[in-house]
Every structure is written in structure tokens, then in C-alpha cells.
Amino acid sequence: HVHFSARPSLPTGRMPRLAAALLISALALCAASPALAKPKEAEDAAAAINSAATRGKTAGNNAKADITGDSTASSASSSRDAKASAAIWIILGSGAVGIIFAAFQLYLISRIEVEPGRRDEGYSRLEGGEDAAAAMTLYTVYCAIQDGAKAFLFAEYALMFVFVVLFGALVLFLTSWVGPNEFNLKVGGCTCIAFVLGALTSIVSGYIGMMVAVYGNARTTIAAMEAQDEAAWSKAFNTAFRSGGVMGYCLTAIAMLMLVALIFILRPILGASLDDEELSQTLFECVAGYGLGGSCIAMFGRVGGGIYTKAADVGADLAGKVVSGIPEDDPRNPATIADNVGDNVGDVAGMGSDLFGSYAEATCAALVV
Image (cartoon, rainbow, N blue to C red; front, side, top):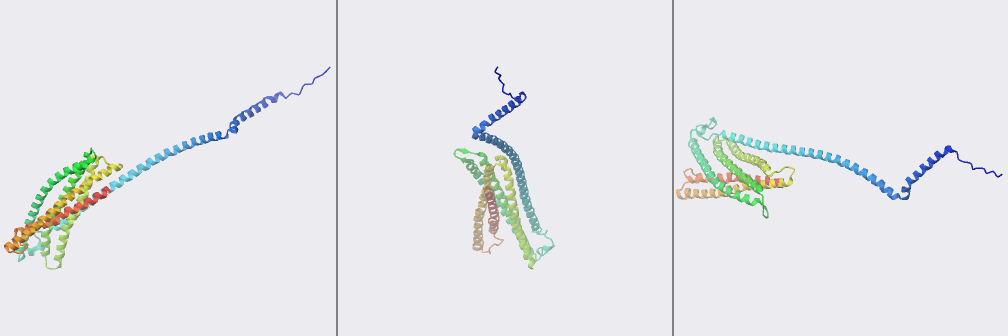
């Protein structure tokens, strides 16, 4: 009898645990096999995951930056508006101070009485004695020069108004032509408004200068006649200097205030704002017409006044010295009044308009730049 012996078998209790270990090992090997077989693809996959994470982080940072940028831009805009408001108030305050100071200087001049019978005790020597006749003649000549100055200015300004209307229409047409076959009436209209306003301001400046000059001429003479000592020289100089100061301060203050008013008038028409650089440039190019208007009136005042005063001067000399044989600038010669009016027109009214034109042109050029 042959006996076969069976092979020893594994314990049945260990089989599930071994099978589970083998299964886990197989799954781990299957999971690791792509990385072991294709390491480049695994790196690319990991890089893609990292890139997506980086993009997400960058997007978050950009969002934060946008919020921060908007906040910074809003803060910068508020700061700029505050500075612009402060600058406007400084300009308006400076103009008001100039006008107030000019009015104060005019008040000091007006305290010197010219009309006989209204002078205070300081001028009592002009009311009697040998200077009484001279004081009366002075007042008569003063009134004649004042009337002649007004008559000349009104006649000249009547012609200037015609010129302003005609040349303003030409400015409107030429400045509206912004390109080939392209017309912009807003630009032309704003430039024309600036031109007319500059011309009117120049006319007002010349008139103020003319009237203050005539107003101060006689008072300077009376101040010099007050006494025979050095105080008369000081008072006469101060009176003449204050007369010039009235025109200087008043002219610059009015020119500056009118320029600011012009900018506020034209901004809504053009729709310009501080944020729009192109429209702001167009606005200040239109404002340049303000200086052009002042220069045109200054040309009339200087050239017209110069020709007038030379004609009056030569006529007074011929009529007085040659024909009648009386001294130069004698009150008996009516042409002397015209000569004095011409001196004031050319040297004061023309000078005032010319000063305004230079001031306005320089300011407008700075704004354009």
C-alpha cells in the first residue's frame, strides 16, 4: 500500500490578510507606474496645477490692486479738486484785494479838493491872494481837459465797437475751421466770446486809466501849491504815484477776474473738465482770444492816441506861437486843451490798454503751454 502525504497548506486565517496586502501592493504599483514610466508628463501635470494656483493667486492680487488703485485714484482726484478750489479762491481773493487797494488809493487822492470853495483849511492859500486866480484857471482847464478826454474816448470807442463786431465775425469764421471741410462752431464761438470780452476789458482799462490820470493831474498841481517847503514835493509825488497805482492795481485785478470768469463761462460750453486733457487744451486755445482782443484795442489806443496828440501838439504850436504869438501851452489857446487831451490818450489810455494786452497775452500763453 502506498501512502501519499499531502503538502502542508497555509493557514486559512492568514489568506485574507495576505490577499489584502497583495491587492494593496498591486494598486500602489499601478498608481506609481505612470510616474515611473512617464516622469515628464507627471511634472507637466504638477506644473499645470501650480500654474493654476498661481493664476488664482495673481487674480486675487490684481483684484486687490484694482480696488487699491481705484481708492488711490479717487483720493488723487479729491486732492486735485481741493487744490483747484484753493487756487481759484486765491485768484479771486487776489483780484478783490487789488480792487480794494486801488479804491483806497483813489479815496486818498479824492481828499484833495479841486473845486473852488470846497477846499479845506490846508488849501486856504489858494482861496485868496495872488494864487486865487491861478487856482480858478486851474479848475477851468481841468474841467475842459476832462470833457475833452471823455469826448475823444467816446468817439474812438464808437469806432472800436464797429471793429470788434467785424473782426469778431472774422475770428468766429477762421477759428471754427478746425480742419479740411470740418467746422466746429463751439470752438469758433468760444474764441469769439473770448476776443470780445478781452476787447471790452481793454476798453474799460483804458477808460479807467484816462479818467484817473485826468482826475489826478489837477490834484497833483494843488498838492504842489499847498506849501513852499519840501512837504509840497512829497505830497505832489505821492498824489501822482497813487494815481498811477490806481490804474495799475485795478487793471491787473480786473484782467485776472475777467479771465477766471471767462474760463468758467466757456467750460460748460465745451464740456471741458480737469480729467479730459484734449478738451482742456481746446479750452485754453479758445481763451487765447482774450489776449488778442486786448492787443487790438491797445493798438487803437497807442496808434490813434499818438497820431492825435502829435496833430494837436503841432497844431497848438502853429496856432499859438506862429499865428497869435502867445507862449506854448497858454490857456488862451484852445488847441492847448486838445494837446493835453492827446497826451493823456496816448500816454495813459493807450498805455493802459497796452499793459492789459501784454498781461492777458502772457497769461493766456502760460495757460496754453
